[in-house]
Image (cartoon, rainbow, N blue to C red; front, side):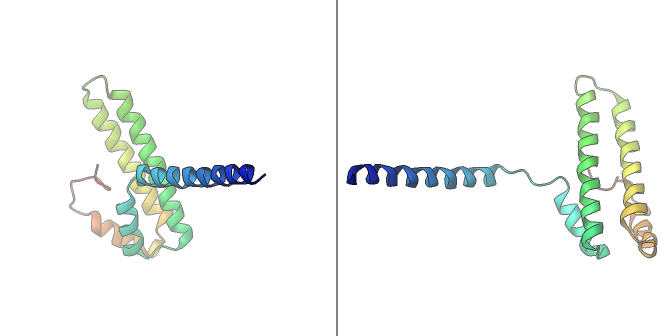
Length: 124
């Protein structure tokens, strides 16, 4: 009986150690959310509410997936069409952020920040 309890105890300890180790591996391999740095700075700059921050992050995730699909579609060919499609997607994305994430009184500040920039926002 004592041997069974010892074996059972060792099995439980090994199981728990395996779970802890796999959790450590998962955290190290976890990819940062797309545009995480951009999202954090944007939330601070425009003092977004939790609801608006959530919406911004959903838009960023959707935008990242859409850009990835466009890039994957054009991977096999060197095509200038890809650049045009990506630029168009970026323009749509910026309009969504401006019109859906920011409250009306902050849109002018957003426009001012983008005025004169040639790079698309967020940077690729």
